Amino acid sequence: MTELDPADGALLEHMQAGFPLTPCPFDDLGREVGLDEEAVLSRVRWLKEADIIRQIGAIFDTRRLGYQGTLAAFHVEDEALQDVAAQISAHPGVSHNYARPHHYNLWFTLAVPPGQEVEDEIRRLARQTGVDVWLNLPALRVFKIRTHFKVGEDKAGQTPYARGIANPPSRDFARADVPYVRVLQQDLPLVPRPFAEIGRRWGLSEATLLDKAHELEAVGIMRRFGAVLRHRRVGYMANGMACWVVPTSRIEEVGQLAAGFPKVSHCYQRPAHPPRWPYTLFTMIHGQTKDDVEAVVAQIAHQASIDGYKVLYSTHEFKKERIRYFEEET
Image 1 (cartoon, one colour):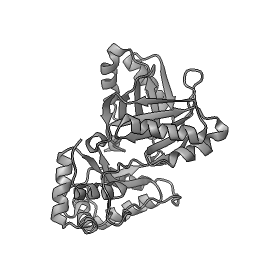
Image 2 (cartoon, helix red, strand yellow):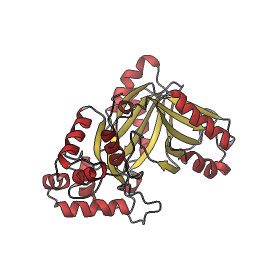
Image 3 (tube, helix red, strand yellow):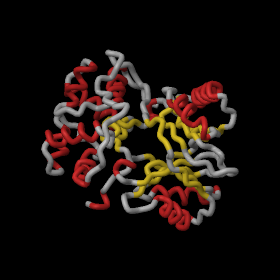
Image 4 (cartoon, rainbow, N blue to C red):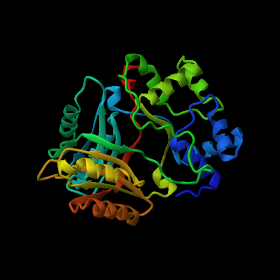
C-alpha cells in the first residue's frame, strides 16, 4: 500500500468517477482540486510511476461492441496451475485471470471478437491445457458494474465528471465507430492536450475524437472514461467473489439489493450448473481486509434472507488488464 496525500486522493476520486472529456482535462481537474495544470500532471505521472494508476482510458461494453464475453472456471491440478494459468493469460481475449481456493481453482474472463463463439474458445483452451472439468458462466443479467476505490474526499462532495447515464439512449454499434474505439482504449498521454496528441497519432482531430467519445458514452457503448487503479496499491487487499444460491423468482429482488452496496463493484446473474455449481448470483466485493468483505456478505445474506452462498478469495493474480478491441484488424 502506498500512502497518498489528500490532493492525490482527491485527484484519484475524480479520475475514477469520470475523467473530463475536454481539450485540457488536467487543467480542468486542477480547478476542482485546487492545483494548477503542471502540478496535476506531475502528480499523475508519479501515480503512474508508482503503479497506482494502471491506465487512463475508455471502458467499453463488450457486448455492445459485438464481442461475446464470459467468466470461465477451470479445475486444474495444483502442480499444473502455474503452467495452465500462463497459457490462459497469453490469450489476448483474457483480461482477468485469478487463482481461487475451490475445486474450480482457476477463474478467468474471456472475450472473443464478432464472428467467434466463446464456448468454442473455452473448449479449445481446455484441450490445449489438458483441462477436462470446467464451467462457462456468461452474464445473463448485469445489475452493476462500477469499480471505484474510495481513496479521498472531493471538495464538493460530488465528482463533477461522473457522467453515468442510468438509462442511456441506445443505438447499434457501427463499423464507423471502430477507429474511435481503437484510439480511446489507448492509455492517455500525460500532456496538457492529451486528446489532441493521441488523435494526431491516429489521424484524428481533437474535436472529432472528443465528439465521438461523448457520443459513445451517451449511448452506453462506452461505459465510462477514467482511471483504473491497482486496488492493492491503495489499500484494498481483499477481493472476494461471493456466489449466491438465489431462485429465479428472486433474482431481480436480490440482485438489486446486492448492487446497492457501495463495496459491491460487480453484480451479475449467471447460469447455475447443479449439482456441482448451484450459484446464480455473483457479487465482487473489495475491502481493505477480509473482515470488511465478510461484513458486507453478512449484511447481504441477512437482508436477503439467503443462507446458500460461498465466498472465493483470489489467492494469486495471474493477469489483470483491459481487452484490446479490434486490434486483430489493424
